[in-house]
Amino acid sequence: MRIVLTGGGTGGHIYPALAVGKQAQQEIPGTSLLYIGTTRGLESKIVPAENIPFEAVDITGFKRKLSIDNIKTVMRFLKAVSRSKQLLRSFKPDVVIGTGGYVCGPVVYAAAKLGIPTLIHEQNVVPGLTNKFLSRYAGRVAVSFEASIDQFGGKHVLYTGNPCASQVVQADRSKGFASLGLNNDRKIVLIVGGSRGARAVNEAVFDMIPKLSGLPNIQFVFVTGESYYEQAKQRLPGENVPSNLKVLPYIHNMAQVLAASTLIVSRSGASSLAEITALGIPSILIPSPNVTNNHQEPNARSLEVAGAAEMVLERELNGDDLFRRITSIVTSPQRLASMKEAALTLGKPESASLIVTELKRLGGRT
Ligand SMILES: CC(=O)N[C@H]1[C@@H](OP(=O)(O)OP(=O)(O)OC[C@H]2O[C@@H](n3ccc(=O)[nH]c3=O)[C@H](O)[C@@H]2O)O[C@H](CO)[C@@H](O)[C@@H]1O
Image 1 (cartoon, rainbow, N blue to C red):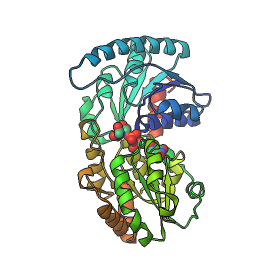
Image 2 (image 1 turned 30 degrees about the vertical axis):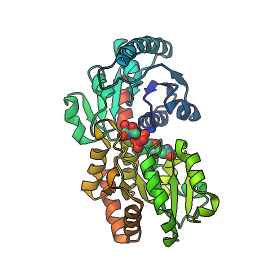
Image 3 (image 1 turned 180 degrees about the vertical axis):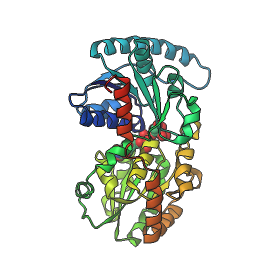
Image 4 (image 1 turned 180 degrees about the horizontal axis):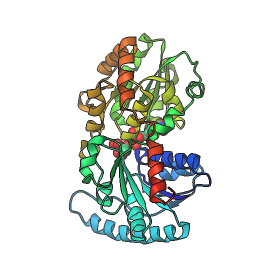
């Protein structure tokens, strides 16, 4: 089967596409993939590193306010549609899957106009602008939360969960420990501000660093985000880094590291939540207030209500409170166990397979 994957900007749109691609390669021998993204998005780095052929179209997002830039964006969209049609005619996919982010717009639209079967995947409780637009043209809409079904009018919508869930449950936790240079018996508290890092989360971590030596048996792994790493190194000269803290710019083997983690402090991007629930990791979630329609808060709320997570709003976040919350969870086996159980009930590890089954159906393989 020949599959075009498209989606991008942030990891939250890219990793679901890659998870579906990998699942298709496992289930359908001889599957060929082509990823279409932009050169500006994280996909231009992440996808080639996975050895998947990558082509780029030039496109930017629409501004929500009326603006002259939007006229330029329309022109760029039309150009990108014609470039997408060229790429699709030459690759001849059986099916195209879009996982959100504005690059999906021209690619999925072009595919629909060429009569190629299409599926879009929505990761968040509240759908993104591009997916809302594309739902009129796509053959199927796969959603990650049951609560989103009605937002797409119901009829060609399928509740699949987020395919990132399927990748992490196959991960080898001992490789996660080994990659961090740690023994398997360590309790890891992983702190990560989404795929690009988060300034506010980082600040709270800087504030609590002097207290970390109070939990000598806990290993803290602090992922700053690539763009904040240099600054973090300046603020944390070697002698100020406690021995139970590792500071990293980005984690490339996240599935393995997650599988090794006891507790995670995280933004509430949709893919992260799918991974956390599939593995049953207790979490402290700090929704980003800088996203469209504040969509990370409903994402986080869905875990909080189930008892799988504590939610801290960014405006209430500080180092003291964060440290107190981490300590109270990580030192209580009962609390860890009940949060784990609650998280697992929300996980959908079969997600990638459900989507591949649908792709086969759309591509006429079943
Ligand atoms: C700021 C922003 O616009 N965030 C959005 C973005 O999330 P963003 O890309 O930040 O976050 P997600 O949580 O959805 O996905 C992050 C992905 O990156 C991976 N990862 C992260 C850090 C790291 O060091 N290594 C690594 O591999 C995670 O395991 C996960 O698979 O898309 C999501 C899906 O539409 C949305 O829900 C988020 O609101």
